[in-house]
Image (cartoon, rainbow, N blue to C red; front, side, top):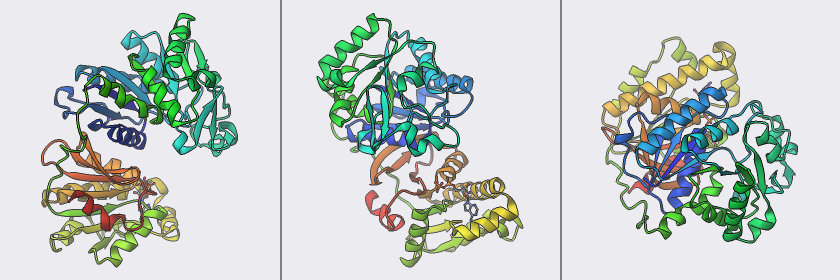
Length: 420
Ligand code: ADP
């Protein structure tokens, strides 16, 4: 393994993994702290997906350190701490405390912090983070329920989260290219700066920052700054060929499990039904009353024609969701459906299903836990942000975990073609 990454949430981990695959690195994603580093699948990069963005700082630090330990034990030469491109955090953390703990573990005296992602309209100029044309503090992120961002100056934001000295490598230097940036990193280190916010308003800047960071034991930032990292390893002759060449999805019956009620998923469920995919609709109220059950859904599945995909979904329109939530409570309804879909997923795999699409972020988390999946090798992208993956362990599965709002309306119909 060349690059070991720790991401503070699941979708961010997938973003980063896709960025590395596009750059030519064979990449595996691990859900939660790796339990058994010796058994990680072979890869150029491993991305550990934690859920540590808003957990108490001590917990985020402990999980990040445990992940770092596993990645280093598996041979990682460089670590990358990935957080959101809008620097989602509070004055308590968790970006500062985790970066600091990783620096200490690696004995590293200097690192950079660059959440910029110009492709997604996140740019940094003179240390100030912009979302599109607005400063971070004027963007919708100011009203984020968990991490409201009221200060756009990342040097100040990060300074409040860490005892380490925070500095800036500004636009003028970044614009001058990789050598100038590397020299600035050296100078900053000599001047006692331990973490430098780095300006970037274009992908060229990110590539140059990546080049300049080749020798750093630790890099921190958004998935944008990873754009330049694969080339560092390629220049050393450590990367070969197509990262997807070894991707070998299992053959077998296919199923779709949809627990997302987002607009995109509603459209995809409708289109799958129109295309004639056999479908079972879960009514959460009937589920709560025991009128339907995972065992019944599995009986239904057993009776379907296995030469084509089947679909089990709880996806519903806002009015119906409101009614369910008023009766059961929002959280109880959510967990009820998630648990049922996780149980159905395990039952379908026991019936021989080997190809699975799961729609919904929380739903995907529940299914991954229910199937006890630890490592997912990243395969070809179906739509932006949603790759096919192959799970490690037995039996291997082809899995596509789709955030609610991702994908075109024909996603459930067309995704299978990407595998063949
Ligand atoms: P998304 O990625 O679209 O946000 P999630 O899976 O993260 O999807 O969240 C959807 C939540 O809604 C889950 O907790 C799921 O169990 C719950 N849910 C699914 N169907 C229904 C329904 N018909 N009524 C109420 N809640 C539902």
